[in-house]
Length: 257
Image (spheres, rainbow, N blue to C red):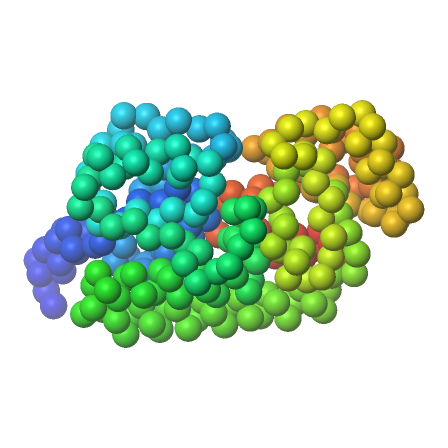
């Protein structure tokens, strides 16, 4: 291929990429791991803000018009705006990221290696359906991603030594469930903790010798820091909304060794 043809190829390739919209950044990480440059991903909730409170701007809603697929994940943003998204683009296909997963009301399914394998399968199925000619490409990347998740599981079971940890928002529920450890969330039913509940957590933490408090930039940190000081635990900052869930899971494993 000569230079002129290469330039032409580079210019036209993005035109043939699937246009996909998602609610949160971790979904993009999973989709790009399988789709790479054959997909473009529009993220509705930007980094550093909570999907429970964010409202999209005009530019983001306009981007929905060009999307072939919208992947929901069950956070409050989806429930509030999915009808609006359908109105903007009546032809868009809505796919739930947890299609193969039986979950509770906790939507944080992207922080479990086991559940991520099922989410990756949903992405694979959708990409192949929309772009069957690249089936083998997507399948190869999917297999590599599954292998990476399997390695993370092995690492977690080998390295995690702590039996419990404290956090404000219950973002790490499925991670804790995967590795048979206890997540103690300070937030209850979306509300900040009462002083009596904080006292109960502090007493429990001392009894169980909890050594780690995880705080996230997207949520209030005051209460978690109060508890950490009282029980003399280390404070670790981990965002549940980083682009690559595999990186977040690895950070959690390292924090709980």
